[in-house]
Amino acid sequence: MHAAYEIFKDASVILVDSAVVDTKDIENITLCHEGVKGIHKIRSRGTADDLHIDMHILADPHLTLEESHKLVHEIEDKLREKINNNIQVIIHLEPMYGSLANNDLE
Image 1 (spheres, rainbow, N blue to C red):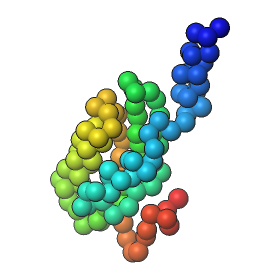
Image 2: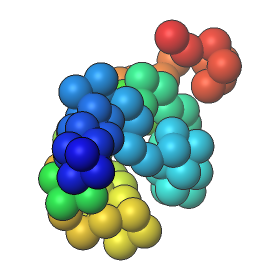
Image 3: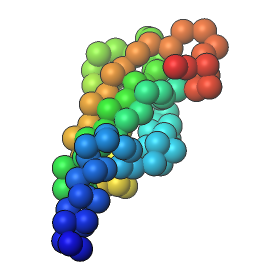
Image 4: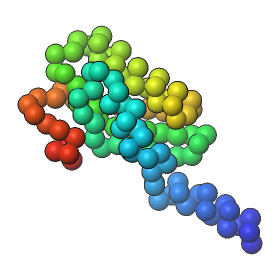
């Protein structure tokens, strides 16, 4: 009975798609990068061996494609260094216009 409970406990986290990593940790790591102006829609799911993170990042709209690409790779590398080397990261990069702040984002 105990074994069944342990299996259910481990699987239920995945099945209900609950956050695996605290979003504040992801936010703090990501906002340390100079080009990042804001972050929202942070999600993490999976297990320690199969961790997936996706997020939307606001950046200077005048960054070149090359600069944007470099920024995304730097963020991915830092997340792997600080959280888990097995992370799969998807970053949706958005231009930041006006005076948007993190708490104005959906």
